[in-house]
Image (tube, rainbow, N blue to C red; front, side, top):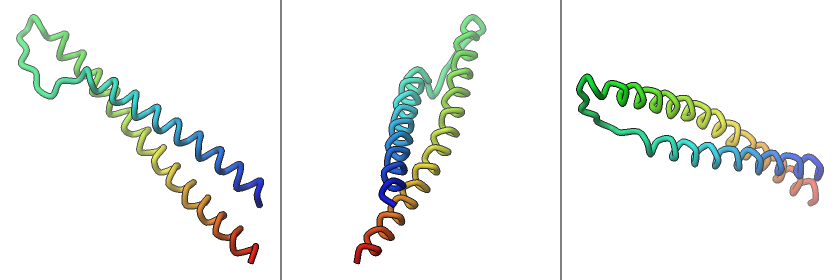
Amino acid sequence: MIGTLTNLLFVEIAVTVVAIAMLVWRSFVDMKENDHLVLDDAEAHLGREQAVIRQKVNMLTKYIHVVGVVWSVLAVVLAGLFVVHGLSLI
């Protein structure tokens, strides 16, 4: 049981590191995005760049949601195993 808890704790730490890295990367990419652009025909390439940035941010957000769900499930399982292990010692 202790080995399972230790392994799950390492997996939880790894998922947490991945989640933090993804959040930092999304904020880095999001810095380049402007909320409102007024462009003429000569600056159309800026609009295309913003569309690519928006697409990247949306893609990262989907993956961040998935990692968040995985992290939550692992946290609940880890807490449950910790409680079961604690009760088995009584």
